[in-house]
Image (cartoon, rainbow, N blue to C red; front, side, top):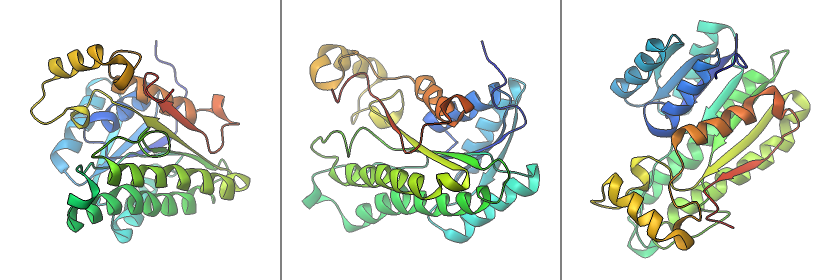
Length: 258
């Protein structure tokens, strides 16, 4: 049963056009939030907005590239111009570039670094500047990964490095800005029900069989996490019930890192 935990609050979700970002947007809207989804692809964002509105929620789309400071600043300003505040921000935009490090191209390295790390830096910078001026402050949740600080797997070194950086950015900025009313945390999903967890040429059924057969190596839970489960953790961290959570990084991976 949904509640109204986020009634009259404005939520920004980057990377909101699909996967975990879309699930987060839908979950916030279901609990009364006004949601703005951002990303580089208009069509995917519009699909998310349509899904939110079909369920009776409020949502709008804003096209923005998180690697460009001017576009991120304009995005935050557009949210505030439309709704008057920015109460919650979820920095979810991210990409995966795989392969052994010595075989990774410089272009792929710069892409994953620019989006996963610089994108979070630029987004938090703009979000914090706004939230610290608001009487009620604000809450930021960064989407990191269990790869990086908690786990390493061959072929994901570059991605893991960027996600370890996101965890570090989260913890550092949480300490710097909590006194000004900006509360910052992170979630670190493992394999989730998104295309990113599919191996090359693998179907969802084949992924499910692999997870079940390799529980010790992949996940003691025996399956991937649903996007709704990840969204639930994000909403909790952003809610008043988590008011004393500062710099926390919730790992959601079915026990893979235990």
